[in-house]
Length: 190
Image (cartoon, rainbow, N blue to C red; front, side, top):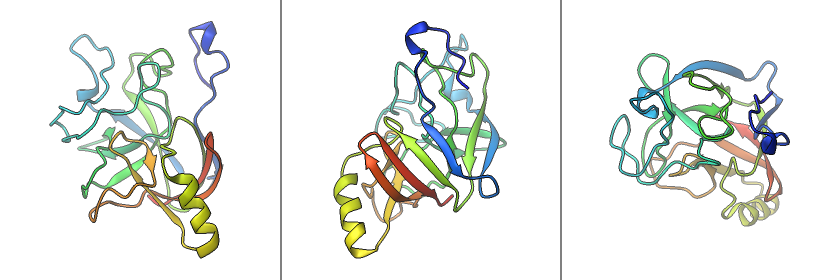
């Protein structure tokens, strides 16, 4: 359940929903990396100029000033997590963010504890804008005729994408169904 603090957001839906996850997936208790907080404790979205804790080539995707559920996360030392940088990198994705973090939809409010969904073979529904729909319709149509699954990777903005960033990219999920530009169903592989 979202902790809505603004009446205009009362109909906002959670962007990641476990479908088959009761024994396959676990909401891992993690902590936001300190790089995602300013000195005053406010949220700071990862930007393309960041080099620590991970170098990025693009800004992380944000909605109303915060990171969205379904964003691919990377685990650092201890329990710390940060938005996956995507691109042609061998960084191991850890799971999918379960919370809205920062901005007007923030449901952790000044805390650093977040949930990260992980577990291979778990099935999730992801609502837009929690994924990058670029090329998904074509890839899904091709997969339906060839039987070859559509591989989803961590995009440079942290969201799931069908765009393969290069040889070192690690598959995060397979696309099971692209219902529309607003909803996909995935088979998590991490």
